[in-house]
Structure formats: structure tokens, C-alpha cells
Length: 410
Ligand code: FAD
Image (cartoon, rainbow, N blue to C red; front, top):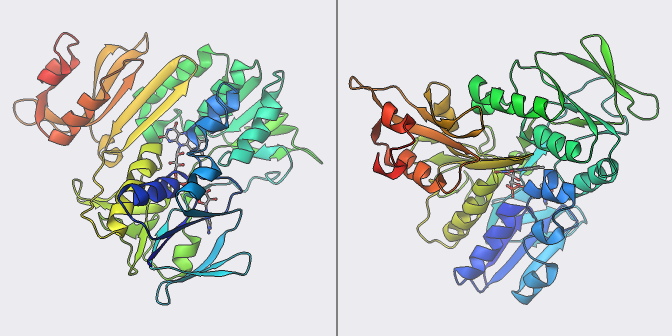
């Protein structure tokens, strides 16, 4: 009987296992997961779970017995240490080995660390794992702590918002001149700067962090010569795809594990999905790696079909969401095309109730294509935004801006 092996117990791995059964596969499935939990998703770790408004049921995809009932073997708390694509074998950290017919690499990403003096002190952390979120929760939920976040990216900003909700003092230190500039560009980054300043965050941009101070525990961060006292330091400067296993196995790697649109890697019977994969995007005609929840969810399903030899192509428009204070946002679009696009706003920017569109170079009649769209505190438009992007049809910027023109009539 054929054996499907999944390495990584995150959203991509867990979803792929579920989809294999849903597609009718009745052979052996094993998930090898380095963390000691059933497969789980990460967005609540900086939001509801961290805040205590959501429990474990919002984090784990299914309880452990769900897998057992479906004949899916969970090997939790054990990392895969070597992959041999020619022999179709995987070695595990406990010394055991597994033979597979088809394997999915769903190893995710690892937070980047900046080698600042003091970064190894207790009290300096990153946030990726459930255990990290539990540590942060224990520190922040009582309030009255001083949190310094290094990096104004999504995770840092979300934790800052949650921490402020408990009355902690929060500073965010960012090297760029605008928060989230890499993800959203300067104008939309400013929306998030104002949001955090209004909620009492000491958000500083264009700063150089020099070191973290403390003898047996972090007690401050030196930034541009000034020491900010800290009870806790969170480093949120992005994540790198966890390609160690694939690299050692000789797979093609470039900003993640390279795959075709069916999520096949350069080695036979080896697939990759989620944060670790850099798939070829058939619409964009280039590789596009996405580190988002919806990517892991949907790529996991596509990988399952591809592993079963069914027609499969992953051409999703990247989708991301965030919740910070009273702001909810959804962003859909092709990030590589956003930098050169014109921003068109529909709605009330100052009130933070709007949809922003990124529109690429207009033709002679002033009509361009929507390459990305972000709805902020405006709901039930994401599907329309996605269809506008997918259609590739040219739209009139004035009509796009005009809130009286229904979006689906453009
Ligand atoms: P992961 O979830 O990283 O899972 C990979 C798993 O593989 C890990 O458990 C890892 O331990 C394991 N692993 C690695 N190597 C091995 C090995 N050799 N052997 C066995 N196991 C291994 N996205 C959004 O769109 N919206 C959000 O609001 C949002 N919030 C987020 C908040 C936080 C705090 C974080 C960390 C991420 C957030 N994301 C969000 C991103 C989203 O969670 C990720 O894109 C998603 O988790 C990727 O899933 P994955 O399955 O590819 O990888």
C-alpha cells in the first residue's frame, strides 16, 4: 500500500493530510512534526490566543484523536533530519527511519534573528510557535510590563496591539522610515503608524537599534544612543523559509524550495507547500513565495491532489489579513507588482474605512489593471476585489475611486 509522508505539522501539512483523505486516498499517511502538538495554525498566536479571547480549539486544526480516527499517524515532537529522494527514505531525530512513496515538505519558516549584542539574553524572544505565544501571554496579560518590539512588521504590530490591550507600555523600533513599508508602501504604512500612535505606542521609525542591555535578563534596548527600559524584547524582523532538509537533499532552492505550479520540487515524488515553498505562479509567470495563512491552507489542498496524480495547479491570488485594535484588514494581490502601481482610494482614509487599490500603468485612455486591493474596516468586498485582480481587465480609476459605483459593475 502506498505511503504518503508529510513533514511539518503546521497548516499546510495538516491541511494536506486532511485533503488526502477527502480525495479518497485510503493508503498510509504519516505526519512528522517537530513540535509536540497536533497540526496548528499561527494567526491566533499574536491575536486572540495571545489575548486569551480564543483557546486551543482556535489554534489546532483538529484534536489528536481526529487523526487517529482517520488512520493518519501523527509523529509529534520529532524532527525529520535527512531526506533521501533516491531511496525514498527519511531519517528522524529519534534514530528511526521511514520509507515513503510520496513526500510533502511543509516545514514552514523560522523567525530571523538580528545578531545584536544581548540578543541571547533571557527576555529576548521571537514569536512563531505556540510555546512562544504562551510565554508572551504569561508576561503580558497582567499588564504593567514594558515591551520593546524590534521591527514594525505584521507580527510586531499585532503583538503591540494585543499588549496595549492589557495596558502594557509598548515601544516599536523600526529601521525603515515607515512601518510595514515593505508590505504596503509608504502611504498605507502611514495608516498603521497613526493607528499605533493613537493607541499610545511609542513607535519610532528610521532608528538604529544598537544593543540589548542586561546581565542575567534583558532590561533595556539602546536605540540611537538612548536606552529604553524593557521587561521583554520581541524581535519581529521576518522569517526565512525552513529549507535545511531540502537543501541537504540536493533540491533546487531559491528563496524557498522551488516547485512548479503543481508544487512538485526538482526531486521525483517530493512536493513542497506553504511558507517553505516558492512555487511557479502560472498567472504571473514567475515564482511567488507567500508567507500567509491562506497560502498554506490552499496550497496544502493542491499538494494533496498533485500527490495523488490528480490535475493540480496552484494559482491563488495571495491573501493576507490582520486585526489590530479596532482595525480589521484584508489584502489580496500580487506583491511583486504593487511597488510600481498607482494607489487609488475608495472610501474614508482618515476614518480608516476604505478600500485601497493598486492599479498598474494606465493605457492611453487612463485605464489600468488592479494588481492588489486592501479593504480596511470594509467587509464583504474581498471576493469582488479578487475577481477584479483575476480578470486582468482595465478599469477606470475615477470609477474605482467613486464609492457610488458598485465594485462589481466596473
Ligand atoms: P508552519 O506553520 O511554520 O509549520 C511548519 C511546521 O513544520 C512547524 O511546526 C515546524 O516546527 C515543522 N518543521 C520544520 N522543520 C521540520 C522537520 N525537519 N521535521 C519535522 N517538522 C518540521 N498569516 C496571515 O495570512 N494572517 C495573519 O494574521 C497571520 N498571523 C500570523 C501570526 C503569527 C504569530 C505567525 C507566526 C504567522 C502568522 N501568519 C499570518 C502567517 C501564517 O501563519 C503562515 O503563513 C503559516 O503558518 C504557514 O504555514 P506552514 O504550514 O507553511 O508552516
